[in-house]
Length: 426
Image 1 (cartoon, helix red, strand yellow):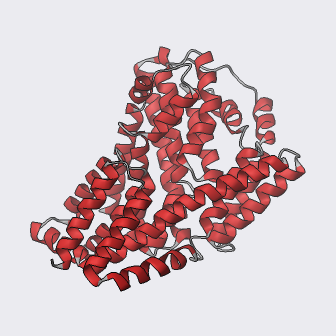
Image 2: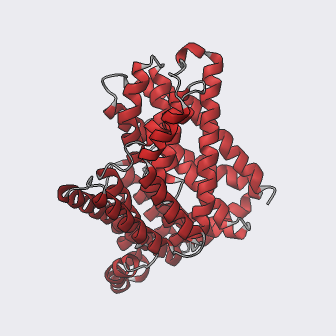
Image 3: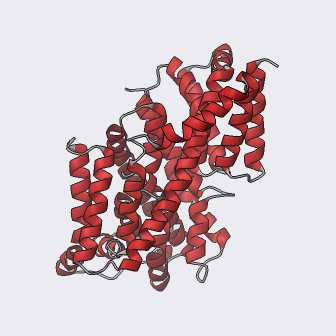
């Protein structure tokens, strides 16, 4: 059997195992090992299985992931992020649909210390949904806004998806973080636009919030000064070039720990829970990364990437048409796969093809991050929607949350269209 055929069969087997709900790390490692064995023999396959776990996990850049995760978990368990929604409410609540907008703004603030879409949705949802229910909001839009706001967590630094993309595509993490900040803020603006459109069509669905004085606003802001200081220090050091991504994560973790101890809001039990959560999340991410590296070797050794590149060229697709096809692929994959698995599964196939078309990898990384986060709110496996339903099941049914997410998906697609148009100008 020729290597290309082995590569195609391996890809088909991988997709089949994922559809059967086999954990993506196990599917990647198992298929890659068998595929490399078939292409090059048992000894090279076993050698790669022995060395790649070490070379992957020993990566200096990859070490930023547990650092940023630890920062987010310490900030969460010590209550540093608890007042973000309240502060956003007193500043944004006067707008039409103010509490929904405050949920989006609070999620953006939480994103800057967590980097997790799911954590963002869960943390803000527990606080915001009951408050919007009390104010008489249409709970479809109330829950939809929180679920959509959570996706900003994977765009605004520290973003785990952008770190993994940077490692796989060999793109500067700092540059990706800076671009992710702009895409995250653009997402916030588009989501606010969606809320305003909903209010314009049906003002009764989003009643006005109670007014607040300027004193209320500054008092609530003063309560979250440690989080603001933490964000400013990490971002300032990162974007000024004073910190690398790993150093920024380590500094942020230490600063969050110090603030929690000084405020006496971080107990020993909270700290241990933060460490355990960090180890579990990091272990899961690292083993997926190891599987992805093995799969990348299989794709290269089998010649599958070159064969796919030749096939795409034979279709005569222009760059824009190719990008549209890739956008559709990610939107479909996002409906069934979790973002990190979809990212690491597809990059070995897409990057060589895009390189032939001269597509900028930095821009593509930002586009992919946005597309994968759309998958977090699209049925049937929109994870953020299920998270919001789990914390608000006393207020709303699952189908209502999915209905409420529709305006935000439309806003996301509009932003993706804008990114594609911008790519044509740069």
